[in-house]
Image 1 (cartoon, rainbow over the protein chains, first blue to last red):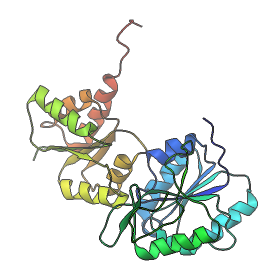
Image 2 (cartoon, chains in turn yellow, cyan):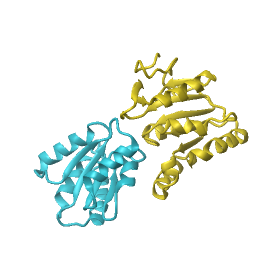
Image 3 (tube, rainbow over the protein chains, first blue to last red):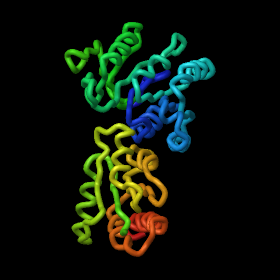
Image 4 (cartoon, one colour):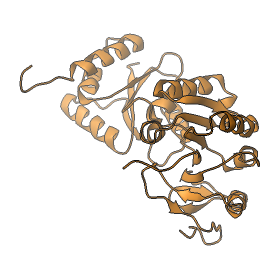
Length: 172
Length: 125
């Protein structure tokens, strides 16, 4: 089934760029652009080369961005190519602070995958967040940004109505 | 030291392949499966590094562009290799030839033998 999703989709995924991104989103949506926003990758020559080549070989435009530059860069791209289907993958929710300025138009934030660690709770299936990260996402939700549990563009999105760290899994 | 094989795949695919290849050839030394299920990108490369160190290993993965392949490329060091598109024919060939070939030649042979095991059998072309 063809997806009706359009615009710039932000995806929380600490597996970074992988098969689901390249095939499910790159081919299946299809994404015109795929961006990886990740400070570690952006500042490591080998890691950066691996992901840049991967995105280029997939046939999508895109690359690796440092979180500090990502919001400005993607906002500029939105002005230049407003109709592009753009997937922005980020692995650290804290990077949303830099990424989501007033200018950036976000179709939705998809919570896809973040591994379990001390200080994190499972908010939705396979997504573990800390208290500050939950607050950050709740702030964006309050501003009207849809926050969803979605793996693939053709999936029925599950809205995450309220994120709660105390109760573990959020209301869906 | 004989080259090792680390088979990194989605789910249990690698575990089954390693088990069946060893059952057919009868060698179980330095051949290990690893699933990427539930792991972050960093955790995958950390576990690959932990397993192979800097010794001669080939990391076999299931499909290009996927987490196992991408993170194996980030994890290996000099004298190691990543070969993607693993199949049972390739893994059997590895067990047969690993004692006589060095890593670069062995990796090239894996690709060659892996491709050789892709064949239209019937109806005959």
